[in-house]
Length: 319
View (cartoon, rainbow, N blue to C red):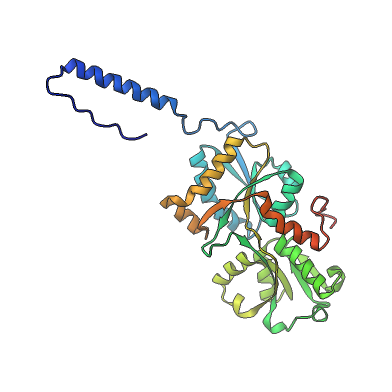
């Protein structure tokens, strides 16, 4: 509300009349203020309470991941006047089951888990981060140690493979497509050993340390690890990359009240406009959030289809 204009009465106006004028003005101002909705009006209880449950997938160590998002969700909690509870998801692939089991209202999901949730649960994507290079996407990377000399399918036979999870674009779909391009039909029999490490950071470190010969991860985590450990760029070589897909987006359940969805979206879309918000985002290596739609996930659908993965019927456990 704009600051009220200062009223100046003519010198000969009676003191009583002046007081009546001021009283009338105050009444009008109070009436106008009362007609405005209080800050938390219109935000109905969620699942019977004022608590929003937001899930996080394990891109990195789960404690690092939680610490990274806590300030953001705490700020949203203050602005929206709702309690927000973080739910760490131990694995990518069981997100569909966990969404129901944990009674989640939303989650920050990668491109593959986000697409699966859209296809199987009908969730709605709201926003995704934009980074300082102007991108709001990521891509997968296949890498080996430079000194290994691994290039061809025969080079890779009987070697050790580390993947992230069967529900990641960078850590699973990309390797499948890459192996297919090399003529490797079944990676399970081609490699001496294969395993899923659960997060992108560990996949990078396992190849770097020699525990695995070839691995896959997303570029954002790859270069984040490289900033802290200069051996990553010095000793690892990129063999292939995937198409660009949406960065980890906030998706919400379809039944969440529309006004709460819009409030969440608006707070995140405008967070970069204030000094405190800009600093909070900078600490996450984010410039701002941008709007995200279901159509933004089409590259994932196309990529999955190209290697024979039907997202509507995809079975994480038996794939």
